[in-house]
Image 1 (cartoon, chains in turn orange, red):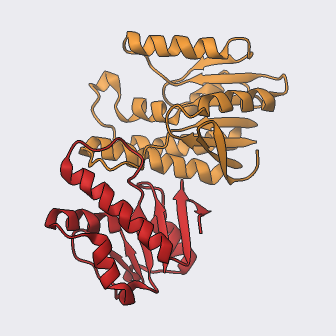
Image 2 (cartoon, helix red, strand yellow):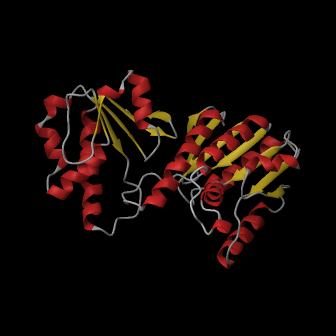
Image 3 (tube, chains in turn orange, yellow):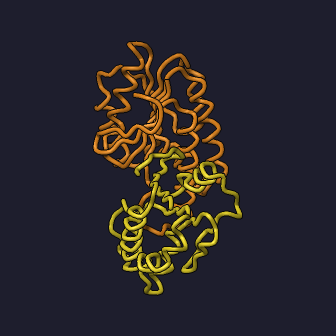
Length: 179
Length: 124
C-alpha cells in the first residue's frame, strides 16, 4: 500500500506517517528515508528531535537527500518506506548546495519520474509533503518555480498512491482510497 | 454557476477541462482588471481581483452587477487565504476582496469544488 500525506506545517503529518509506516510494516523491515542534508546547527537540532521522536519504533534510517531510487541499492523493496519529506528532497535537487544553490530546472521532472517509479517498486510507502499553496504573497521567481515544481510532484504522487490524505490539526481529510 | 477553488498549481483548470469537456477556446484566463464572461469558463479570478484592487474597484460589487453574464459559468479562483496577513497593503486588500468575492460566489454556486493535488473535494 502506498500513501501520500500533505497539509500545513505542524499539523501532525509526521506523527501520522510514522504510525502508518509502523503498522504497515507488521514487524517487518521499515525504513526512514532521511532527506535533510544539514548545513547548520539549526538543521542538526531539528534532525536530533526527529531521531528522538522515532526512537523505539524500529526504523532503519537511510540517508538519502537526492536520487530517491538509490535507496533501493541497499534497502529491500519488500519493506516499508517512510519518506519525510518531498519538500526537502526537492530543495536538495532543485538548489544543489555544491552548485552554489543555482537552480537545476530539470530537477522537478527528474523527481516526478524517480518518485513515481519508487512508489510503483516498493511494497509499502508513506510519503509526506507540505501544502504551501494557499497564501496571498506574490513570491519572487525562484520561490514560484519551487512551489510549482513541488505541486507537480504532489499531483503525480497523488495520482499513483493508493491513498491520499490531507492532515489538518492532527485530523485527516481523506481525498482518495482508504486509511 | 460552478465555482472551483484550490491552492496554486493544484490542477484546478485541468480538473475543469476534464469534468466539463472544456477546450482552450472555452477558457478566459484573467491577467488584470478585465474579464470576458462570453467564455464558458473564467480562470484565474484572483488575477482579476488583483487588478481590481489596484484600481480601487470592489470585485464582489462588480460580479453582483454582472450577475446575468456569469450565472451559467464555470469560475475558477485560487485559494489565497491561508498564509500570514501580508505586510503589503495592496496584497492585504487583495486577499480580503478575493475572500469576500469567493464567499459570495460560493453562496450563488450550484456546485463548489476544491482541488487538492489534482483531486476533487466537493464542498457544495
